[in-house]
Image 1: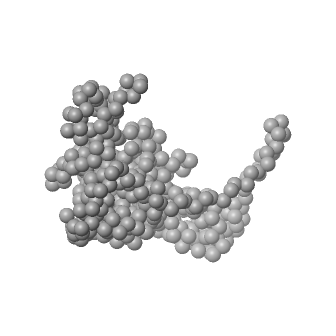
Image 2: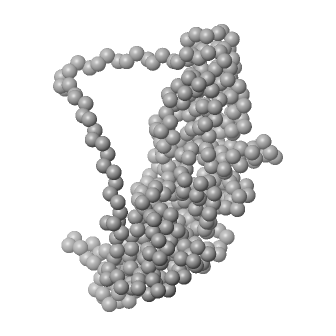
Image 3: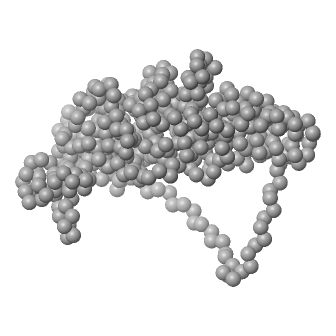
Length: 446
């Protein structure tokens, strides 16, 4: 176990007292209550028979000075440095409008092209239809809408600055940007551009501290203030229906010694329920608790312990896919070079170390208490008191956990649609925020 875990576990007196707990501990009940939002003021509504309001007139484009328009043109011409194509933003059309001087044509043309470029820098150029299994909703357009970006750019007469302020803040993006002009082949340049765009699909600022898994690398990193402080090998989903989706979620709690509710595909499909329901002693020996509901449904819950399929910890990050990060009793699999082996969830090497670190950083838990919770062998849920984002991403050209820019195998074949979209003219953005593909609940850690 790494140094941090070793330091934390070197508390024998506390560990000996851990077994006194009579049952499951849910520390959520000890968490501070969330602040109550301000009451919403109701807006009076007219009767259903009221006459519909007249449609609003189209909003007039803001005024552009020739100098601001020239700054936009120069930014467009140099946008290739950020992996985009100047031709997408019609530099010739803008130049012609500038030549005609101030007026409505320049205002409308510059506003339209500024909007296109701002959208691509903030949200990514790749259309949602080309983002396979993309379920990480980017909040940037909510916190920094285009109208505010444009208004600020024109008020300060700093068009380029307003646009460049939309770029991702992670060092990985800067590393890809520096590598782009050094690409030795068109294919290599295309892959760098595609992976630069993937960073724009995420929030510009990922947070002060966060977890990020790069699925093709099969590694997890714990990052604080843009510096990697811990890294872990992970096991990710097998290609196909059990591939790990791309998510941006929030860790709500650390669960030491989790239980696992066995899915019905195993309870019924593999006969586990029928075998154990009439033999409670055998179920106990195998570490299961079995119940039968009034409708005949058999439920099997694996109890905490070293043989639990979730291992000794689970990070609670509620999402519609039932994806989470957890330990595993089969730790020998981390020695394999290719680790796309799971049913979608992410199994983490040195998971106990990660759980304790998360409890300390995100829940203000003391190292002593973290040791007690782990060694109790009792289900213990520790709620986060700080926001702790977790990102499941897919980068095929990226900095590895040692800071070196590398290529990784495209294990889910997700590069092709992104590359194809870059080979086509830019598409207008839509209101779609994530993939419309079927959500497959991946709740089997085996």
